[in-house]
Image (cartoon, rainbow over all chains, first blue to last red; front, side, top):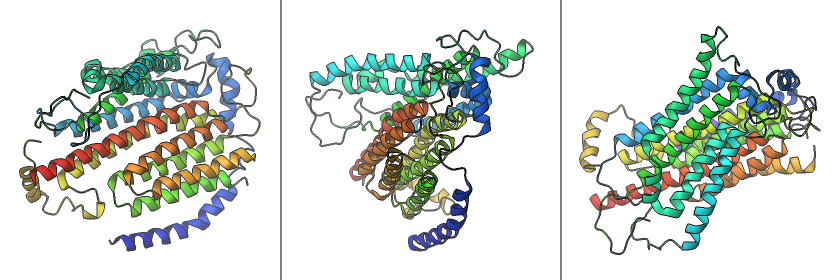
Length: 258
Length: 130
Length: 85
């Protein structure tokens, strides 16, 4: 199919859909007027029933925990696919330089950049941990905190160079974190069944409202998600950057691993 | 103006589809797909919003204060993170397709079924020891 | 609807359009990051701080970075081609 024909087909299809879309939009509830009854009930009941302040975490890890289990395994499958595709075709004879175009001038890393990264890196990791741990109290949770933690490791790449970053971040640890997080979440689902409760029923003590240790089983599931997301995203960064390492060439003099 | 959020969602989806159909670069195409994804975020959060409500976090406000719909937010939250890993998977497929065929233009990609067996040894001979 | 929400929705539509219409992948990455930031502000205005935090980390930082590195991998690959061909 030629590009022009394809665009024509798309244009006709979109034009045909316009009346339907307009009718649908006209019949949707007015923006800002009302919300679905399900959400309304959760807002009314969940703080008392689960002792958590953050309704989004309550839904993700407790009320609709099974959906999150599915999402968790989608994450695992996507990252496994990425890693398998990339590792399969990679040789061994690569230098430890990444993100470098040949012929581009090599500038030594300035001390200001290094200092900034060494200061900001730990602070960012701390913020990530804070976001993970306060999942049931304030906005945040394993998904957001995991991504922030993974981005935090990249500051080490910026400050210490690719070699330093690879020394810090070990691939098999990341595999263990990613898989271990998924296992932890599954165990959280199965373990209550040993006590005779339902799948993923919140059997742990619920704690006090507005306290960090509130929500019972949610905290463990949250930790599992944080592990899986942090390990998975760092693994993605690592495999992608590994892909840009240049093949072994003649060493240019005065070049360190940048 | 109550239709504006839904119209914006529809527009984002349509423009993303146009980008998918007209793109001449596979990396650009993955970017267009993420625009289609963002259409669903706008639609869902638009449906879950209510005037004068607080965020569904009862830390500063006592439980019982009118809040927006937390179900929509939970849906969008997980979708953003998982969608990013799917974008990564597509980018990897793009990079591998480039390594095999030497082009990023979807118009120049040959169908895999026709002569795929014959083409494979030729490509591996062209890129030894990758 | 308040003026700021209207403005943010229009800005979202504009930045999404920009991502599609900027054809050069190297420039598109900046449009993607800008789109992520605009979506973050919109989600904050829609009382969704959880989603905004997630979009900021993913759409503003992680995804543009993955695009950047993928583009770089393609460029290093092109260099190999010239060497061998």
